[in-house]
Amino acid sequence: MVRGKTQMKRIENATSRQVTFSKRRNGLLKKAFELSVLCDAEIALIIFSPKSKLYEFASSSMKETIERYRDHVKDMPTQDSMRAEDVQRMRQLAAGMAKQIELLEVAKRKILGEGIGSTTMEELLHIEQQLERSARIIRARKMQVYNEQVEQLQAKCRLQSTETKERESIFLLLEDDHEDKTSDVETELFIGQPKRRTKKDRSK
Image (cartoon, rainbow, N blue to C red; front, side):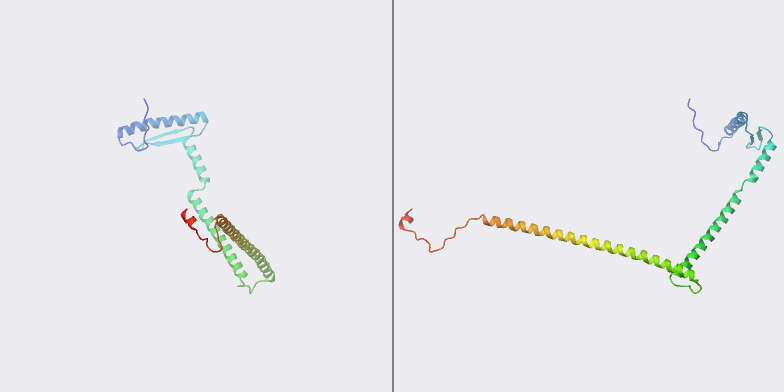
């Protein structure tokens, strides 16, 4: 018979709840004992029933195991201390970013020629070199854009010239075809007085 899957929720029936508690408690105590023997693990298990009855298992001494646990937890950072460290780290990061932004603003104003009254000669030379580098980059980009625009215009002119030549070729072909058709029509041209018909011709 297939055993049904138990839903993980509180058992409402008091009798069933007590039976399940007794079975699972004994199974948990057995597993703790087996784990301590098979793996040489130090285990302390404490269980309180719904009626506050105590059940416990300790592989050695419950008191010593609890003291060992307390000493171990004492050395670990608590959640509150970790949160405080995170807040302090974020504050330091924000302060550093604010300082960088302030320095960038000062450098920007100096490049624009503002607030350079107390600037040293070395700083002025550095700013001048920065401006010259920027100007070279801007000129190079300007020439690149100019050449791209010239190439686009040349390509457009070539395309228009090709289309014009194609239209002229089509027009010439149509004109030649019209002349050929006109030359195929035979016409009789008679110059002089019309020929008089005789009685003999009329009798025919």
